[in-house]
Length: 240
Image 1 (cartoon, rainbow, N blue to C red):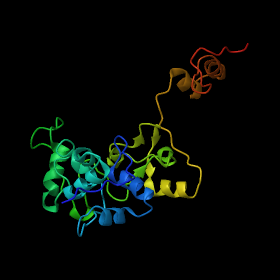
Image 2: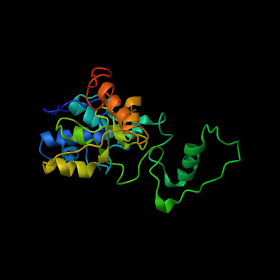
Image 3: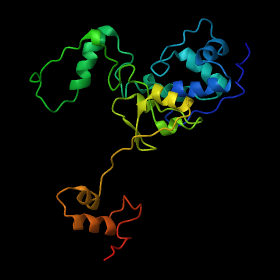
Image 4: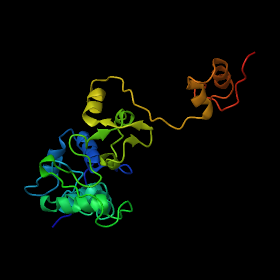
């Protein structure tokens, strides 16, 4: 049995990049859809490509990818949400019959707010659906950073799939709907990110409040405000 042939083009995944993002970049190099890349180039017969590659893809598929790209299997597994079981998730995906139990564990495990048996019991409605702990439901699950999307060599982070992550740590702007961001990039339109509101200095807070006198606002803005001038506090001197 001959060894699997290494793909000629196989860029390495970026740190924290999601598996689906990396596969999209790979498929673009070969000018084919991700589904065709996996179905016809991994040597696996009747491979069923999952609709969401970031959840818990088959080990056989990841093993074949490791052989053809040189990326270690353990790294490929960590690029999926399933690779974070049991550290972040108790189980993934959550079977329908275990949904209520996993939900109760998610909201009550290690609770310090109520004594045992005191808190109310919430029943999860199956018709509403529940993606699982820390996860967003569809289509909100797919988000992207507008500034990262403008770079064709930049992928999307796996952490952006988590509900508790709402911004890009690199660009300090809020994540937006991935389809909206993608359409903006394809159409060549300007992307206007929504910056995070960082902590303001006392001078900025006082200069923007209505209770401060006009002279106080002018003095603070001219002498010490660093956000409007782009300089450090104390570098400007107010004119008499």
